[in-house]
Length: 433
Image (cartoon, rainbow, N blue to C red):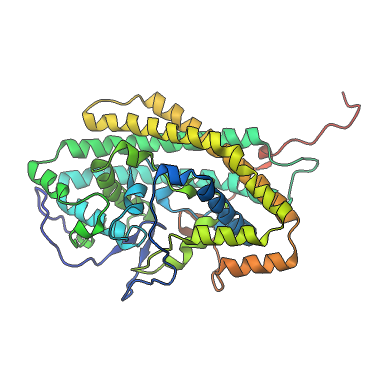
């Protein structure tokens, strides 16, 4: 592995050779020109837009389409950038002035620049952290699988004998534990980021200052290949390493508001929407993932439902407003606490983990509502509706793996613990003591 300049620098290297797919977390191969067929018009992004009734309704409907027309394996697919996401990267890509935020070259370009600016010792900090974090990232992904299996059982009516369905309390508690673990990983990641930032020379600071947050066109074409980990490194180590390099910049150059931001599809990530939207980008070097597909397909799904079926989905919107408002405040509190590292202070770890747990409880609350609504709709669909949904899915020729660890297919689904605890126990017979 070429180490680059010992003291860091910001000169140009040769054109990028290895490009890492940020959104789906997979290596990508060359293509001559970006594919524009699925790219929608530019949109304005903000927290207010993300939690708006319209954005939420269409995103939930999109998830419903993906869930009902998909399978368990597709539901486990998740971009690695959708976990431990308190570092402003999602906002930076969504507002990118060059419109490249949803293209695989975006992460590669920012990561390449950061790794080129860092010196050997600073890159070694990222490498060591990536190796330590890889196992935790795998565990985080694997902890999602039983929950997704329970949601899938609810959809298919595969309930424990005598059960009335999913137990909201069990779901909420489980997702709370999941997000507390996410917060712990995020805490340690922020600690490493701050350690690197504190060691910058004036030259390194000047180099990064010339890279404008949210404007891909200001980032030099730097070859990231020379800074990759040695051949044979575990895939999740590579994922974590590239994540460290890219999210470091969005955090270092960003703000609390950028860290707080989330896209409408950030919550309830257990229903296969990311697979349906992102799979066509897999294996492509330069592909602009549509920013309008979620809204367009969500509307089409709702239009195809009967009024009674549609009401199962639309009823979620007023019920989740309070939870979404609290999610914004919890994310802001976590982001504010983590940024204390950049000031040379020590954030309250117990507070961050407690906030993370609360965040998960809120995600569990809305996700339970989605799963119940989708299952109710699924029970009453006609054959014609199912055929239409398969057409809207538009993934003919794609076959999902039995499961995914983020975007990496697992050819044999991991053995899961019993998922009956997610459901209500059988009702006691009348007269039983």
